[in-house]
Image (cartoon, rainbow, N blue to C red; front, side, top):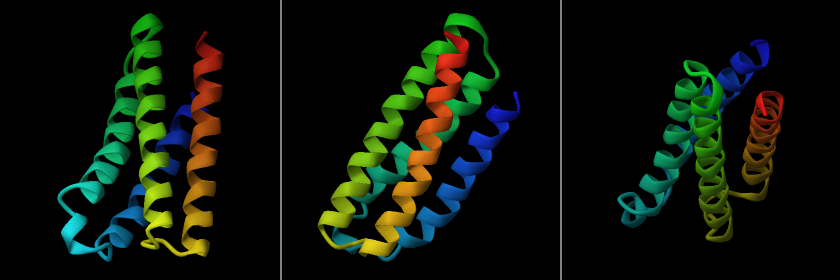
Length: 113
């Protein structure tokens, strides 16, 4: 249960870091790529909340959905870096945050299997 809370805190930290950065991304992409990036991050957070409130196979379903959202977030972050919307230091920082969240999620999935 304590690990459940850590992933929620780390995800909140990710969202708090990511939000202000996306405001500086090119305006022409804000309704497409930026919105999808933020949706993936927010959908991940919401799915983790859903998983926390469920048990058994329903929880596993939510955890697998969260994994899918996290993979989408990774894709959009890689694109943002490729297109130079995130510099190398920012990308390294956010990648470390996402990797930690991924490890926490993987531990949660494996603990409940």
